[in-house]
Image 1 (cartoon, rainbow, N blue to C red):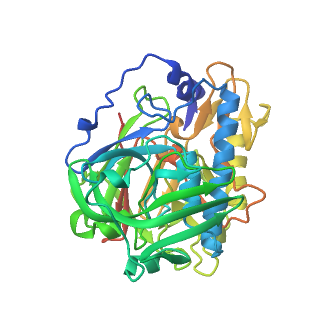
Image 2 (cartoon, rainbow, N blue to C red; image 1 turned 90 degrees about the horizontal axis):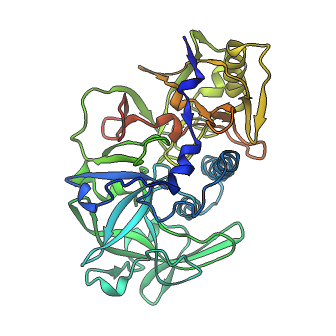
Length: 434
């Protein structure tokens, strides 16, 4: 089956709408029960949207650069290198994709936290932080339920390189040219209408270097300090999200916490890799372009506990990245079906772009027990200002020794994605996230 590119996502809308007159409902009362609104960072509800519109090429190149940093982080996780967990938080805090509202303290203080399925802990900049952005820091002094985590507490052993300042647990982290100093603390966390007492998180005190956090991070991984671990009785280690499309005018999706979930989903097993047990691995067995299953070496997709190789579902990467043999097979068949006589151009890290109208094939991800055929909005980026259209996938960056295939958030948009950890399964169903 082939799809006319007239239906493709106008990515420039992601940026031009920032300057538009849209009036989405940004009221916190839209968070109810155990369901939170999910905003794209460029939503009119977000304080992190660009102050001026970017050109389409600038926006694509910027997203690619952020994805490359993300891939470096994910690669370091499975390689077992001593990279601090705050690194992902720092990158996502600086360059988030999807954000949710959370309230910390008593009385509550509203913060915007970036969703991150590949990180465990929550981290927020606190008042008085040297080098942090002034945008909505958390003020511990205004919360009477705030307390420091003691050095002897078990949580203090779950952060890297803990140190003691008096009797309080703290840590100093180095990442690239930046350093982060934070305290491990506890306070009341409220998500939608659900109160979570004594939630453990990092309270950032100081940052130096070229990257400073602007907002907070909500870790949705499977580690001991993650939201799932700390709310096991409340949410039973189950959540789902629906990520809004770039072209949705009000950029609103949802994060649904707990076992009450939609029932019209198809499932594939969730796998665990001992090299990084908090990441959400799945068994991607093949990829189909049009009606053809492309020739990918089995080792390019298989879970490998020794190297950390395999396929993960990630909320923080924008464009799906495949290890080189898998990507080349998909790309070559995509180009063949578009037509060998059509000139292929490049744009940054995208090597399959066209400047004339073409017809594109569908792409189907074949998981164990679950096939997902991606519609055009999930596989193509298209500038309606000009005439450039690109396949929104790429190989892992050249300077990253990545063994991971990452199913990214653009390919997940307008799908309900359910993480059912107790039953070790991932559910997916098409859903319009508005």
